[in-house]
Image 1: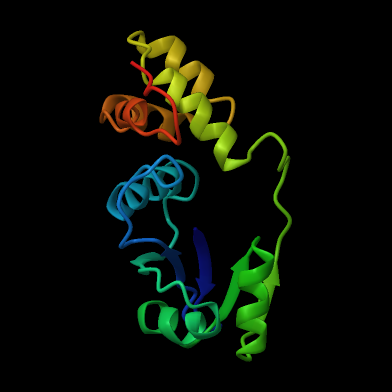
Image 2: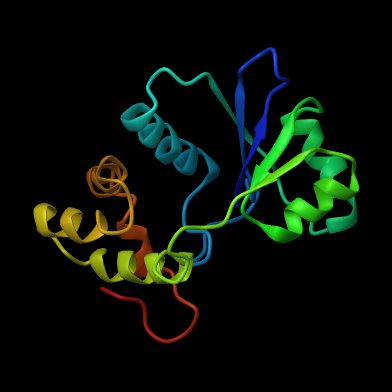
Length: 167
């Protein structure tokens, strides 16, 4: 999960929290938090190169009532929460935070499991151009290139939720 904590109104700083930083890679969460940070930074550099952004890793605690207090140790107290996740918005609102909610665009097309499934199939494609072209339908081209060029795509062939791994 990635949520954004906007810094206090005077700082202009954007703080992005990358959750599940303590989790092992799996088909639902296939990259380390450092790799996810690299993807976010790649996107930022492509679309918002002058943005003042801090990215923080937030480990899961599997304890929703205590989540905001826990996460605040990593992302800080000042600011407001910007999220597309209803339960996260509710937790922060209940803790007295100002919350800005946004709807996900084309949610049916951009569901994580769909994208990961497509990427998993592409993890066996050895032709860079077509693989990046297919990935670029749902993720920014710069991130698709990163996934392919850094070999981050290939581990998906070995993650599964049942049956035989791809490859």
